[in-house]
Length: 603
Image (tube, rainbow, N blue to C red):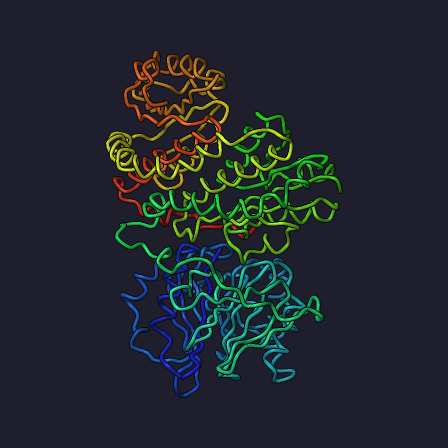
């Protein structure tokens, strides 16, 4: 996943400071390298780029001393080609008059590169992207029309792409094209923006136009032009009002977005309850009449899907949580027209999840999505969509989107049971109380997590154990520690720990127990005792007032007691804080974990 940004000023103002700001707003999408292309006052195309963060780029670049009223920019998460200055975007053609920034993968780039090299084109990078400006150059030489050349190039490209193109030939336009990757236009008072995500321009405008696969066109000072090469009969997409506030996309008083977003969870859960209640009744009949229900997600979204499987099973509703990347092999040949797919994704752009959905659609299944991004591909290709109220999540590690995904499933279950005449009001009342409980306990959770982190920081491995609804929480807690603090951590159903993993336990080995006050309590107690007897250091999350497990624990975090269906939502917050503090103490930036991007939009 990469970040794409572009601006054209309606009144010829200098756009470069805002273009830099847009790119900073998108750095969560990739931070291996960055670059800019803009037109100078003499009409020539200037390109400047380098590996490293935007901050490091600005320290050694003079870009903010330049002036331009039109420009494009890119922040990269490397796929094809190493992280280097030469592989950074934008990429240009042989003449130096066409610059392209790209998010996605061009599957047939080797074939195209060889063809273009045979025609005399010279390549300088290892990337798949570089074939695009050369291909456009080739077709522009035939007809001297940039839009036509871009459309001809699109017909040759196989794979996924969001493209923004700047040309010295047609200096008053920013061109764009989309196929399988997010791209949108921001409609401002003084500028038009093109970007791969709404936070790029949210501080200047909340009016957005979400582009669709096959859309190609340009923005100019006079407005925008869009046509669709896949379906020419499509009308121009409607301009939508973004429901997010610009302040939500800023760190404010917090040192990192991740900490801010952990603390935002009370409001995010409140908004999600309201948002999902407006839409969840629409999906009840589809779910109740389905032959089979599959819940599909990747990473944290898969763990929330697994939570839903456990929760729905508790109430007699059979579902199957499936890792998105395994969907095709596991159920691709058995899914049918009577089945329902509930696809879960924060971004709505995760390649594996979209691929699973497309397979299911081809076989006639109905698609219900749970997404946070209203402009996402997943929302647009779904039959019905549930929009969460998490707001923009900038930190790479999921926090508030995980808790709001679980919240969404609880609300959906409430409407399903209500349709069956089953009372679920106690659970909903307690779900509605979670924001207040979190606000009352956040400081205590934070202080305890920081103290435990000071011990955990020197460890190299950890186990997270849970059972039932506690198991997906343990999985998510372990994921947080490994992805931002770089400590190897694994989660197991507690009963499985003695079938192999316990062999690794030695004195001082960290074991985190997610202990709910349900029918698994006694077996969790036994598992913790087994670990403790072999020298493990036990960190237990337990119901408030617990005595038994606390006696066998070295550190205890007490969780206020509410209904067992929703209480596990409270458990993940201290685990998020624990991972955050370990990362910071170890000197890592939790917002930008190495090798990771916010959404994996490639195979």
